[in-house]
Image 1: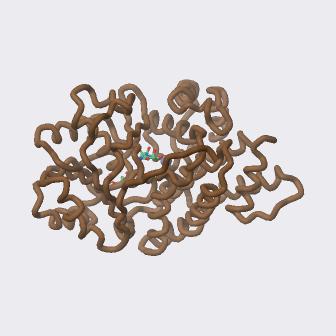
Image 2: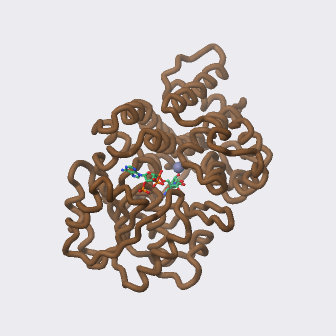
Image 3: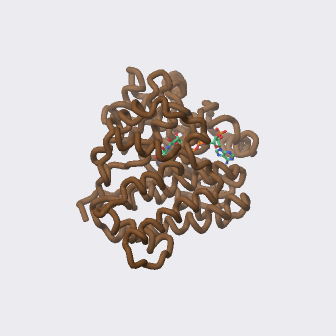
Length: 385
Ligand code: NZQ
Ligand code: ZN
């Protein structure tokens, strides 16, 4: 196991009714709150009204309309409000897009140049407003990590950024707030959670503690995602998925590991060019990436995955065991009714080469578990058609 530095300073308030603690969570930071949210779903679910009435003692400013795959323009708009109104704290209510955008706003609030600079150079972030979140969709883990992803449609870039200053101070995780998430988004979110775990499970460094935690979390998604898709108001299933989403990417699964991620850089190109749902892109890519990198060096790890996660009995041939685990992964994602080809989501081969080149450069794919060149990425994209 490699040396590591693990610290997650986000206070988690988990369970029914935990929004009621928002006043006490926000009070230490000041009185002026920027409330951020997405396309208005929280108004339809009643969460917006509930939060506004809970926060009656605060001066509330608002930035709504944050897009899925949030755009840099929303960051500019939020930063302007923070500067003009001298905001003390940001309260992000929504899924990963709203939370990610709020992280970029928190940093941009103290930056005089173009906020896009901070996405390109997150180490330039020297100060950020405090952020608290109320999570409404289990997927990205943004509620308990210090990263985010912002899209610049003009340059066709969707880039991840991260800085410890952006870690949410506190996150309210009330599973009831995810009851209204549609089946398709629940499925995509579950694929995203699984991918966050798989990205670090397959690593050249061996480390039993994170791997056994990862296997447990993967089994939790496999058990509860189908229930949440079928029964949107099943509290237990929503609760298990919600807590798994946070643990999948808060660093615990990657302790002692070091490789660059593989599917996420490839997916970010798909959503940068075609604005598709992040989890759908990952579900399409993951089994194909697995098949592409299965070789004599990786087969043992894939066989371990097949046995420990999918309960597949060891077969005489290690490759057979490994392939059965990959088949099970693909079948599971299909069973959630996620579109499983790029053509189904309207993607053609037109931009494969440039997307692959970007993915290699921005995603550091040469440092991945199995290093990938642009031609490998094109091959994987083709396998997804
Ligand atoms: O826009 P609103 O009205 O909020 O509606 C959203 C949106 O249409 C809706 N939704 C959210 N909560 C709901 C709900 N609908 C009904 N009931 C609810 N309770 O769902 C749609 C998708 O929301 P979004 O926030 O975009 O989804 P998600 O949480 O999957 O976030 C995706 C973004 O996060 C980035 C992705 O790249 C993508 O841009 N990621 C962030 C990461 C991080 N911060 O660490 C890691 C991830 O790998 C990922 O890349
Ligand atoms: Zn993801």
